[in-house]
Image (cartoon, rainbow, N blue to C red; front, side):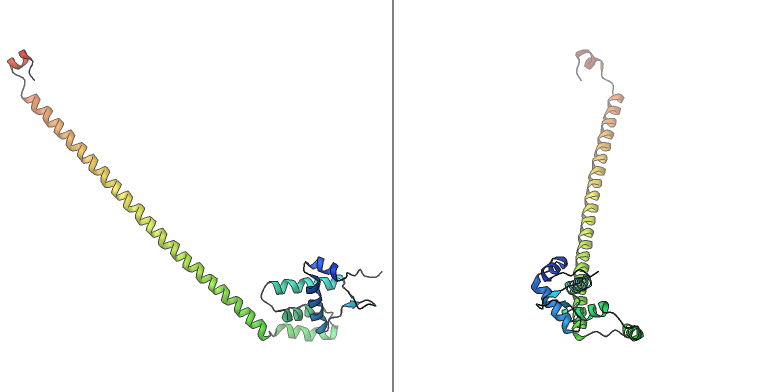
Length: 186
């Protein structure tokens, strides 16, 4: 049974990018030795494996960490079949991955952006802490003012009660005279 193939437009739909981008990625793969089948009219016939390789290129390049060239090299390493005698060599190479200058520059740029983002977050956090401290101070001052006003009002009430009590005692000590009782003078 022959494996199902997909033409450029079908592969573009499956991967989720335009046909011109599929052609560009296919050319980049072929330039590095990746074999994509062609029909008699030299039209590319993509297998499921080819479509998966193209999807992987899209993932790597859209993540912003790899250039197209680096992504193609990575995909070729992932999707090409390895000769068993070459397998040990590839394991040694995997242990000593070598990144191109473009890869390093892209990674450094990504790290720089992350550092800038962290700096912004730290500044924002410091500003939030400052505002929180200001609010806490305002609330504390407001509570203290309210407490002072309540204390002052209680003292005034106590003083008033004392005056009333003193006045009542004075009245009790000086009873009304006979004439004031008789004529109703207070």
